[in-house]
Image 1: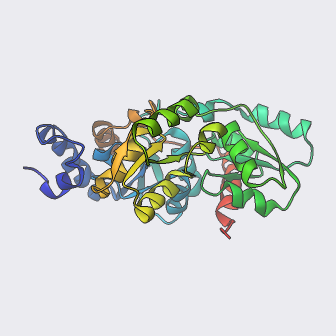
Image 2: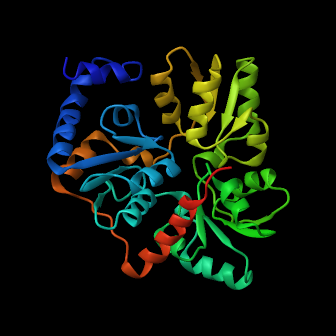
Length: 323
């Protein structure tokens, strides 16, 4: 068997009969990374064969943003969606940043434009605008600072103001509002197409079928889904909760690959579905990662007139320290 030590990491999710079809791409990617002085940043929603075999840095949006600043490489391949590649480019303007598929978008990023943000600023003069990193560089450039699902509470609290605009994820803003009742949080009606589909009925059904199961929801889910869950947090927080609390059975109310990736490292924990697939994250594959490194495509750039302002919004976020 080719690369047996890597197959051991994913053997629970990839049948042995399928491994010979994947191993040549993995072998080529490992070689190309050395030749190109490249690193692969992979989001937690990537499939196990990417997450556990070729990725150098894995994590949620906040972790990838932080790690991108310190990457010692000439080339960054972002196995995720387009706004993540833009963020990596903002923080590494001198490096080449590639995304294997330019069609890897995001319903949240598509839900708001720079013109929309300018309209909000005119409507609410003086109110700080906190923008979720799941947005384009153009939207970030019109904002005061960014946040992720992992640091939204700390970011908003750091402003020390009575009122903020939090865009574009309406549900993340509403769930953050529940944690910060002393601050008025104005919202925008953007939603994640993965998380908005979950309902409290899904939670009731899984609890009926698996008494005692622990339910963990992403804060992009509707507030009534979060309220019906045992814990809510970013993908990194979800991973930490599972590895620290070690529930016997767990449901991750988020993108499907999250459960697969945590399960690979925690074989003693049973992961129950439901989950939903992100069609954009699933545009990443070993094949197109290999092709990106072979052909140095597709390069992600940010217009100079936007880059400095967008970078400042991300850097202000990274400067906020958790309490």
